[in-house]
Amino acid sequence: MEIMEVKQRSEEILKALGEVFVSDSTVLRRLVCAALANGHVLFEDYPGLGKTLLAKTFARIIGCAWGRVQFTPDLVPADIIGTRIWRPKTSEFTLEKGPIFTNVLLADEINRSPPKTQSALLEAMEERQVTIEGTSYSLGRPFFVIATQNPIEQEGTFPLPEAQMDRFMLRMTTGYVRTLKEESEILRRRIRWMADDPVDVIRPVIDQARMVQMQDVVERAIYVDEHILDYVSEIVRATRSHPAVEVGSSPRGGLALLKCSRANATISGRDFVTPDDVKSFAHDTLAHRIILKMEYEIDSDVTQARVVEEVLKGIETPKEYSRRVQG
Image (cartoon, rainbow, N blue to C red):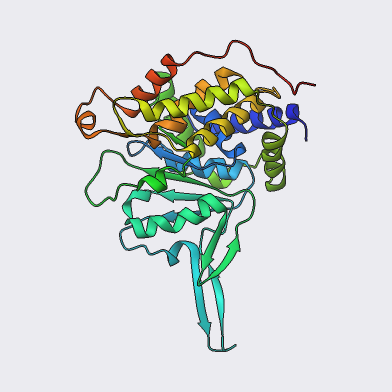
């Protein structure tokens, strides 16, 4: 598969998403970039804004198998990854796979379960495998998690630990629609669908094999100049030295920023990364990896997003960079 075909297929996916989900096109584009970069996404927003619908619609459009886990306080790790069950008829244990054995896993209201249950996803999100009673099982390609959580309702919830947050490539918000026209369009589509959930009538745009091919193009065909690599590294390192920050972004944050930049270049039909690719994803890849000092946590004027913005302003954008391998 060539870069221009990935661009064309990505545009088809974005068009299909836009026909179902009324939102800022930037949100949809970043979701597609995360999938092409083989990363996981955390949607953090108020109830009723369509986070679950977007995740289900996206899985359907890319033609991949998907599963859903509704996180609750009584959920245990085996409910997610599976377990071995004794079969009296055959006198042996057999593996009962959990919903994690899929391509797209919707982890709905992930902060409703305690950390022990949340941690069941850690190995799968990082290594694309799970371990059940000492035996490791690989997960098929593609595999990515789309999780949702409500940031305003704290009773009965368990904040995601830093290790879990660090494994999400992007943290995004869908946000309210911006105009009256968009608000009315949501109602029009509901009437047209004659159902609250139109997922069953959505036709895939691509299939699983093609999605894997698109991911391979992003991984192997996009050139990144040394000046761009230094730019990404400077941004990540600057988050650690900011005066309001207790803990800055991990190296995994730099990798996430690089991967999303390459995916954005691919969707744009380019085989090289520009500084604008990096800037456009800095907030969504780095902000959730930053822990503010306690005194700044109390001050509502200082946020993780503001730290990233100040970091970007304080680092000079590369003026010269190569668009292809030299030599």
